[in-house]
Image (cartoon, rainbow, N blue to C red):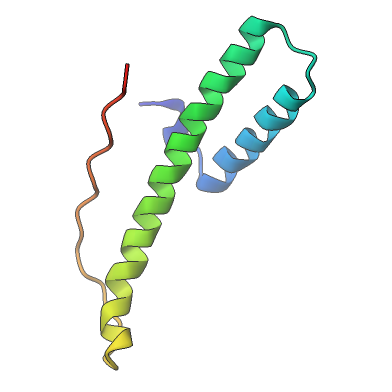
Length: 86
């Protein structure tokens, strides 16, 4: 399991913010900057997946509420993660 699997969305976002601050400091060696960039991309991907899942859940709750009915849960399938480009 990836490291992101143990993080909440909020924890991943906080870690990402810390990485950005460190990278913006400009006092990094190239290798460290690359490590931070790679970790940041992993966190961005994880956060986007979490947001996509949350959006899907909200969309499945709202159709009945919009038409005047009671909101209810509809089972859904998670979208397949995109393939890695490398």
